[in-house]
Image (tube, helix red, strand yellow):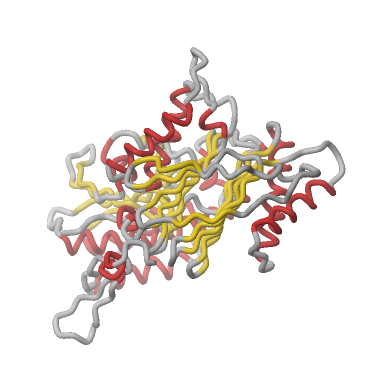
Length: 435
């Protein structure tokens, strides 16, 4: 079963370029405007110059190149908490909020948003993606003779995509970019954990996977992981015992054990869990354990297999409503002696289903009156976001913000969310709509 049946064929189709008058199509269903020679020179220049410049030189570089087409440009990098967008330049610059303004709306909605600068000049705010990971936005200033039409928007969208790839590739060896991305100082535990995690979002034409960790600057024992190859997606969420660096170390060992076994070709979820047990039980020092959900999804058929290790049950949402909790009795947490190895359970998804994995830091977040955020509130928020047509990454960003607001910005425990959309249409929400 394909996710969406005929919808997949419509969205993923590639028109035959040999047909007279046919337009080339991208993988997500938009025709690509032909590039003029000036734009070819711009994109070629971005690629050629990017090899040797540092990350904080990216904005001046792209700005100098787009002058040839009567534009200006500046890249804005989003922080790990997805609260501010910071101009990527060597000298200091004020960030702009994600929650308000044209730049923020562009980031939230994944759309190209028109606006004006402080001098009244015309500006386009363009989503900037690395693959499907939201890296930030690109501010494009329009010269007086430039027409804001579909061809221009397609060209700046291509430019923004190229800049997103390059910007994220520069982060591993730029402390200045990391400071921008951290929007403050990370704890030692959080610094270690973020180095272990995959990007927050990835997508194919069959599935969208997105995750968040809160609080991003203090997270310790929580983590998520995934891998996607061909038509198999492996998924995991973890919650280590305790807080601070010891919890991070325990979770990091469990995550690494599972990941290492998976990369060696192990696919049985029980064997993956056993590898984590072996590593955690064999280490010296205080006893530590990790609750987890390990899962795999066949993205061509929708067959989900999962194993719970003392962790909250995943939620299955269908047609904007909670269908069920996947509450098969769990095996013991990873790193706990004794008990049965657990049962791998199979669930058949339907096209359009959403799967939500989370840690108890979400549902057990308390407000000043001691009221839990709770599973009901979690489900209601997720259902409403789906009915509103929000893309999966924006659903989680807003949900994370709601959980933080419930505790006045100070979570008592780490909170993790991982959302999976099995759909042939959900990836289209990640990209701008063109006429």
